[in-house]
Length: 375
Image 1 (cartoon, rainbow, N blue to C red):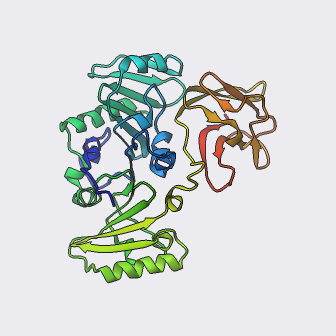
Image 2 (cartoon, helix red, strand yellow):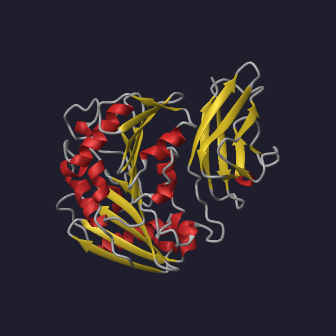
Image 3 (tube, rainbow, N blue to C red):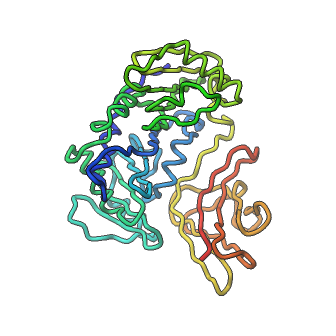
């Protein structure tokens, strides 16, 4: 299995006390952290099909920087309202960003920071543009959150792993692989009533070889916890009996314990971890916007910038029974930047959420690319 590398991404995660509205305490950690390291361009597409990439895209927009073209991307949720934030780290051309944001609802905002700042006019989202990366933040205090994240990257404010010993141990042990999903507070409900519910930090990470996938789980327990490899194996068996995915899907499993940390390494064919390798499910990275005409009862969804989107995989949900196929609306086989599609909302109740769904033909894999609540 490829070795993990240094989790330098955590330098961009401020401690709760440093965030806008922080009360000086660090009792509340981030709810979850997603990390994605794009594979080399010549690797198979399935190596980019993962939940971390998809969830990071959900709190970022395409503004001229491809998520698969950066060094690493990280996302989490901050504050009492758990507003999303993401950083796409790597070399950035600010001029290319300026050209792209001009086609979107982002507008430049004056800032005394050493980065260019843009805010969306149709939703509470801002992006700070630096030569070493982009920082996105949602919510009414997005600009302040961006300032804090950048300050954390410089070591000017406390970072999460510097104030939370459990998160430090978790990230030290898990390291950085192709992608990771981390829960700083552990997993409160694991199924099967097993010891994983006692964790104070949990992570699942993915790595791959040429034709092999490796899933690694890291469980961190409280200090002085009576942890043994046998107890971990018993927990894995309980989860398997409960029908939960994991070790039961692997062709080989190795369990090791070091102090209060358990590491479970699993090997399996890529299809067990990434779905189909023939048509991998890659969430398109797009900036979406909308125009709603209440009088005409029509919602128009705009593709402002980013990846082409397969129309045969697009569905509209929330305006009728089930989902409506999009491909028969004369849009061609791809929805590209500058294209739009219009949905009738006649007879749909106020407050209904309309979703643009991306669904693979096998019906087992789907994600909402765009959501809008009718006013």
